[in-house]
View 1 (cartoon, one colour):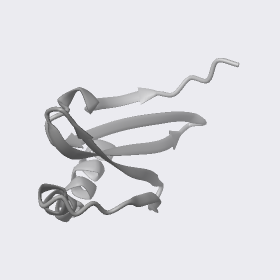
View 2 (view 1 turned 45 degrees about the vertical axis):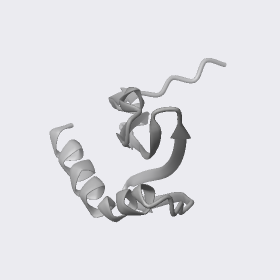
View 3 (view 1 turned 135 degrees about the horizontal axis):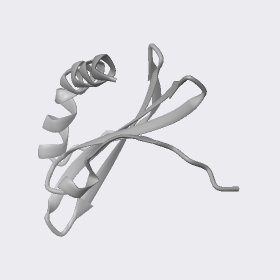
View 4 (view 1 turned 90 degrees about the vertical axis):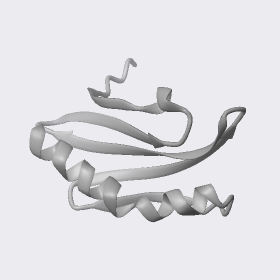
Length: 89
């Protein structure tokens, strides 16, 4: 999935302007979007350590669903690499 991770870095770099709006407390809600074969959502947050945003990516590969998250701000626990989404029904 190296190429996919590279694609995500490009997308994260493209969204750097969101960081500036977060730093100035000007929140902008962004709904789920699609860029090629990748869906992503941007979630803003505000907590005791400060404000930031989280970008959650979604992709389907070979019939399996994957997600990844990158956070910009103090909540580094929101970051995680690609993992398979498993629905227990």
